[in-house]
Amino acid sequence: MKVYAFIDSQNLNLGTGKDLTKNGKLIYQGWKLDFKKFRRYLSDKFRVEKALIFIGYIKQNESLYKNLRSAGYELIFKPTVKDHAGKPKGNVDAELVLHAAAIEFSNYDKAVIVSGDGDFYCLHEYLEKNKKLLRIIIPNSKSESSLIKPFQKYKVFIEFEKNKLER
Image 1 (cartoon, rainbow, N blue to C red):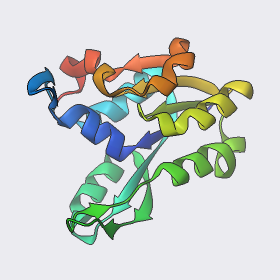
Image 2 (cartoon, rainbow, N blue to C red):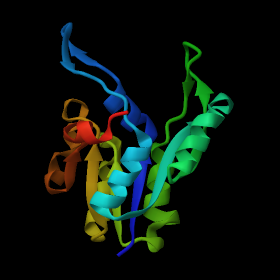
Image 3 (cartoon, rainbow, N blue to C red):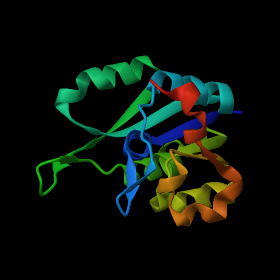
């Protein structure tokens, strides 16, 4: 059985690396994900053969891209634009859906989607209907979209694997 992982890098990075507060109270302590350990985790736990990471392209991040490739990821780039504050923005949702539902669809038997984003609801539904959804890996339960509720049996939270995956 061929298993591919489709990874929303922004959701994964923000979901593990950012402290979340609510009404001034810390509700989630961020941590640094070790991408090499995470790639091994995907292979060992879910038999992921190919891990595609969707990421906004910023020329200055070439060393990051090199490290991700050497850790075993295939990178799918999205051109970035600057937001109103001048910060680079590269929303990869459409690229991830296109690759999982069309470009790579016939190349794998099961998919692991790495994101807690509700924007992937239609993809989860499509993969489930086609018996290709293996797991939805969510960075942390505090930032999970309520739209993922119907896919309870597929969900895995990597916050509970922090001790194995932290840098």
